[in-house]
Image (cartoon, rainbow, N blue to C red):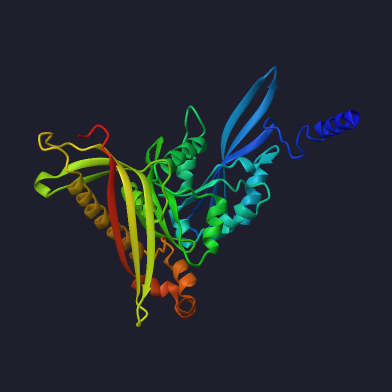
Length: 368
């Protein structure tokens, strides 16, 4: 019996050694960033950041970073042209960032997402972002310490952790495009200096088309909790009080609870109520320490201000025809007969939003 067990262990160890699809990074060309843009002739401009890693022996490696560009009428022809310009064995599975220029995004991003989604060696976890101006202007930036795609990736991860932008990968965006009951929002990047890029906020979509409307980081920090998304933290700074004596307050959201209610009256008028409860920790609040901190009043003031700003955000969603909160999905689930009769593209702009934010201070930190 003991010999049989030893034989099984020996065979298992042999079979598990290595991996059939293991690929060495050396002597390969890695694509770590891709951009798509629309030129003045209506053609597609594509660019990739290619990393060439060569093994020089004795544990020494040489890494070269190159920007490769191409212009073609279609994305398929673009891919073939780029491949012909890059030497060596190409590994597209390491493409971390896909940047789509805003003018091209307004035409629709479906063909480009599908191209990356269907490509056998694509990285479905790659981040998709929209850029102000051309995506190539960001992808072509030179960084001394690290290729720009890695810099952007870390920038996006930080903004995601702060609940400023959603985590939008190729896989998730593809599923968003296929969902008729909810529109997506994508991170919006801006090149602010010759060698600096920052996350401005989010780009609002209608279907697969960028509406041309963006929300700043301050506004997207409110939209994401309304979408029931809270990551590691969500720090906000607000101004409270009358204009003559306004004071700033900063706080961190520790927990949220959201409740949605769709009401349809006899005239088929749709009202969408969003009740959001936020448990927060006060980080900073300059005040007269002789009076002490009135928690009850501060809860009321914060609730009133955040409800006001939430209404501004939902008004922007309506004006841009972006159903980021998924009202269509709610109607198709709970009012299927109505969903079959209406044209949601036309009906959405008539929805009445009623957001209500209730703040509950659970900790004041060093604020007394």
